[in-house]
Image (cartoon, rainbow, N blue to C red; front, side):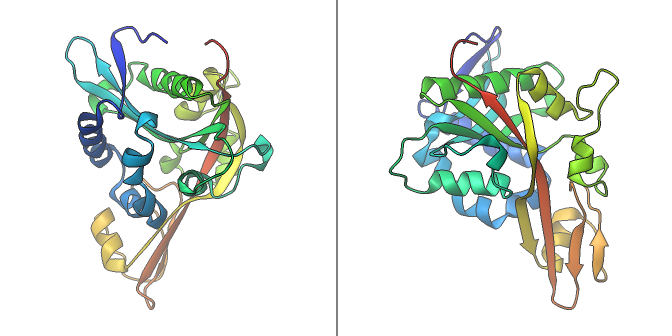
Length: 254
């Protein structure tokens, strides 16, 4: 597939550059607390050694700069799309890391990050197309995405299943990231209510969020899609994030 003005690079051939850019991008774009989920911390580093060909970047032709990063993992999963697990992102990375005696047939997205200086230039759609292209190169038939809606953090008190149903006047999803996937041929398959969990002490969460958490209860924090739950007596804070399952077919020409 051609990406006019950009080149697609994968980490099996450009590991150091892409890995360094990915670390910088995640620090700049993601809320700090998202970097502390137990499942992600357990498995993330292995993506570079076990599945480098599924980690990729778009590079600007003229400047040679990396402008966007994508992460994905192949799965041996032939279940129907309506049965995608409620654990979403955490299921995908954990299942992908397990040894399997069956051929891997499905690609799962883990992240797409467009660097801030290059957002609103249509690169999100190119990154989705590139991920489908990578899946096709490796003979995978479909792409599943535990999607983190872009604007949901502005509505943390709204349940995800209601938020997904919001539509613009044209009938397309209200959320721009969800809308982009639908326009790119993706189909919404439902909510994964336990997609990502982060647990920590009160002090840790105060450091991650820059907020005081003086007593037990629910708090909305910057970047979170739902409230966090603080138990001051137990010195613990728990955050459970819902995402949205989206599926793309990737076989055949695009």
